[in-house]
Length: 90
Length: 395
Image (tube, rainbow over all chains, first blue to last red; front, side, top):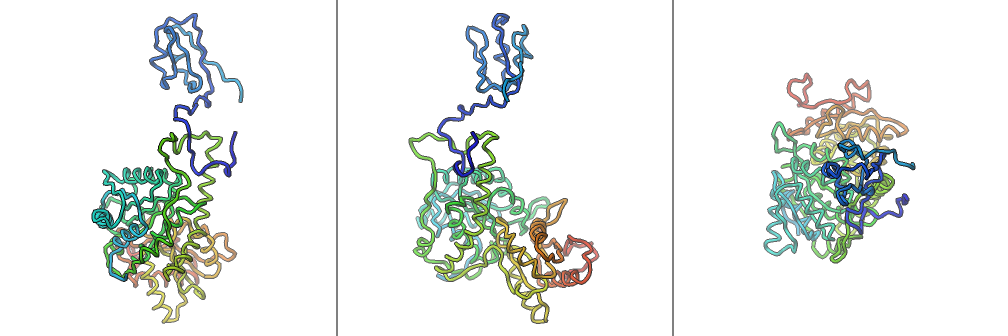
């Protein structure tokens, strides 16, 4: 919710570290992983420029709180198990 | 105590009397003796402050930002290339709403390499969110630093300020200066009590990310702060006069403008010369006046507008040039005058770049030229004064 100028402080002061800046909000396309097709090659994990892919038993789990939807993982995946779909909502 | 000192020493005394608690600076010609004097004050214990020698002006301002965020009153001084190296962090200081006060000894930008007076460095920081006060005497330098702290630190303003001395003309020229008593300054300028600061044991991020849905509200608030600074500075100077018995003319000092037909608008030390020229020309019957731009930011739009509606011609002298346009002070004055009911003839004179002397003779020629322009059309709106190779003779 946008606060009125009268309500905000002089300069933004945050009580949380910058890791709590959830920067995934400007994503337009969202990666969807089909685990059944994944060959556990970890190429997506190596290429993600935002380091938001975690490997769980070698399979990518993408942290959508930070993912910007650049699509590099989907582009680089040799087994084509990641597809980009349009974000729902606004 | 009445004594004789340079503009640079006046700056150092201004910072000392204001009880700056952290000073971080990097030496550069012609600012060096400010930093030397302050290092002396700190070294001898006359000033209880932390002196941080840094490796660049960018770091000097970064150190001031950190110290000010921790709640300390900070001071630095720089010049020309040093100021422009600070550019990025100047914006940080204002966005973070830190009332830092700095002296800039205004000097030309290279190339050609030059150490002499020119306002390019200061004018190029126009949009950084700093107040900019141009001085015309060493007394004004000292007084403006003290007034700047009081203005900057007041609630509703909370923005930084730059006090500007002309290279060598003020920085290295000795003049009589009244150094006020510390007790009086203390009564005028109490210790800095910040509205927010870093606190030990409380983890916080300063100047953190805001999304597009919230950014503008912060900038709007900074705009209000600068707007408030206009009136606040006038009040601060009024209070200063009550205590110290002197003033320097608000944001736009008007000298013999009451019945003037034409006025010269100028900033810095040349305005002091221009007062003499006004007196001499008035003796000969010319109705001329001077409006000294003491503040470039906040710009005295209303004062200029009121003045413009009363005169036939306005000559604006710029000691710098905005390539592809005109002098920056001229464009501001013209913008202000446009909405006045009666618009005077306006002309821009670019003079005194890189330390070239602007003599009384040159100023007299400028007055004569604007007088002539009020009687016929202005051939060229921006005229470079006293440039070898141009047909016009100015001396």
